[in-house]
Image (tube, rainbow, N blue to C red):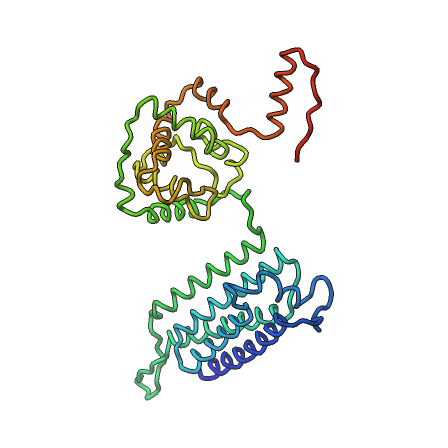
Length: 350
């Protein structure tokens, strides 16, 4: 156990040195000596927009991380050591993904740091296992001793091992498939997103009641608002089967489905007013209106009306949908033809 701790301390010291060299590249104004070719250039990587987080150089964060790892190893804080090593590996894998998939340039120091943190994680796992299965001796009949091991390791060891395994699997998945809005969200992602959305809505907001009556006039007002502001993503019929809606991540939901219709009026109003983070759903309306935004409440009325929407209503909404330059030119060409005017060539706008 003592030797493993010393190995970790030595590797952490090497990590501090590598991070210091990378930090020098971050502030370097002349040509970097490790700018080998188009694929290997420390200067490009360490001076890219991804080289800082909240204004702090990534290399400085790495130095602090290695110092913490060395300190935890010296102080025998094994749980914190393993957690710090696993976090460092996750961070290093993220940077590796940026270099491989975004920048397409590699940094020698970053690759060296990745190798160091992998070895540190392995050593920290060995240390955790040694700590969790510390041997005890019991006498046997011949005067010898027999080694026994506890049947259970501390729960923090299992928890860290689980997190470590998940991080490694996610890293391999990113390296293999990358990130794309074309991918279909997995069942687990959908489950987590639904739970996060449910928890993100305050209880007070969820209990709000629509102050507007479901009159034909107000539903028509909501229908006009929907056609002008919401149909691009959700479609006039609320199915979400539009070019934008089909290619969002996650996809635009079917607003007629029970998953939406079973929500309270307050839920729907809060989502319209505040949007849904990390999706394509923006926040609408002025912040000063609070719980009394009549336009948003009419949208709630119209969402309730979507399951019974008629073909005539959909046809009326099509005339209210925003139109691009191409559509406007096509409509003008049709009008000119019907009125006997010579047809003009459509100008393609990109």
